[in-house]
Image (cartoon, rainbow, N blue to C red):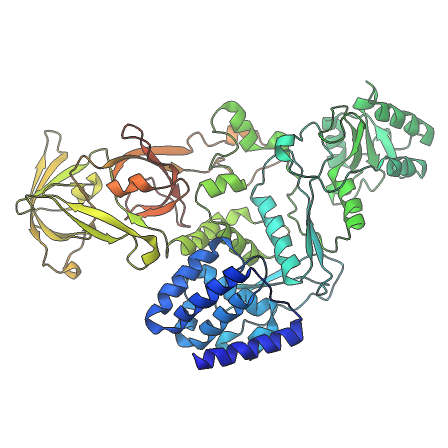
Length: 624
């Protein structure tokens, strides 16, 4: 304890002199964690304390509030003094939230890392070297030896970085948006800068109050367009969208490109008035129609839309496009780094999700098959997994959605150490096992929901003479074979009964609970034959589209997967009556699931959605 206090004092003194950080926080919360921190110094309590802290940090950056406090530094000191015990956890996936918190503190606050013992193990890997070019906004990600990631931002100065996240309020955040906002947040925090959140409001026909919580900046930029027209840098065109696209692809100049300034200004005034002629027109920049980058072939700067705006009503009839407006607002607000995916601007009329919803094959905006934030969270993805996945890629041009398996594998490493275990048996073809020496009177044992994670709680397991097995397990056993019934003991299969079609209907056996589990090939899950079992619907989801990469002219109806949701009826242990919506569990030997619809009544099944684990997916009925 004295060594920890000495180290803590050294850290605080060094930190304050180098960082000038106030280390303030809610006093009562700080005191609570300071009292708990001593648990990290007791060998028998160390692992439990790590588990508790790991769970607490699942949705938090720091232990108290939104900034570093003495509570964080104290726990860092205890962990550093734990030496090999803590370093073994840092190299494993057992406590991912705690490890990431620890590593981030060492990266963001070198003053702390520099005074810790065991320099080789306590300090993070060296930062990724900065790019020699400050003109391109990009970032590099490098995986360290402990599995964390160092990401650097070229040209960034401590305390001067300003990033922004400017979504259009016409829909819901998808995973591409999540990449942008999390990266912007990461760099703003790393360089002690600021993050601006603002909503793009340039498309009133698709924007709704439903999507808008606040607007940070009103765009009144009509004067810019008139100036560009007078300088011959822009022109007004009424070319239909399809024709414009064909001309851009063929690098053919529009017939309106060289019309006079007077004619352009005349049409511009029609656009401002929102007339019948005006709504047919748009303003295009006079750039380079032969540029290899198609987005630079006379892009559209302004469009006419008389639809009332959700903020300014009918005041304006002309609005700038997102691409044109955003740089101006960035300049006004002092944005230094714009980090975004190259796919940030969705093509709504080509969206398979939107099309499928209209066709009635999906549930709506919260459908777990959608790659939008609310959808993938409903499917069981944790925000922490998404953060780690994005940081592992850095601020790349594209969020590599072809790496879904990697994303779900990261998620598995986060949920596996902490999620409770339960048991389910598929209803179709389930088989009764009747051991001759089973208990005549049912009895109950209380066991941990997760054998290695006490905070997951406990559950009551009922032991009866007759038990249910999955049909697949019943077909896998042979007469005379000894099998292990998980959480009970071994059992000999003495007789297999079949119907006239050869299907197994019943197994007779004999308990051999003192038998060794090391000698058996099959370890089977089971459920007691009791009226307390709860009905379940196990949902397995597949990809929405059958093509790995979509092309410009693809017909989305033709590439939609006809079967993306598979449901299987099952029964589960009675403890599952207490599951809450959004709770993540593991069904023994079946996989990870998130509770989508909790228990309401016996006639309504609990709905569990399968969470991918990064491996090739199997239907719910197949064992893992």
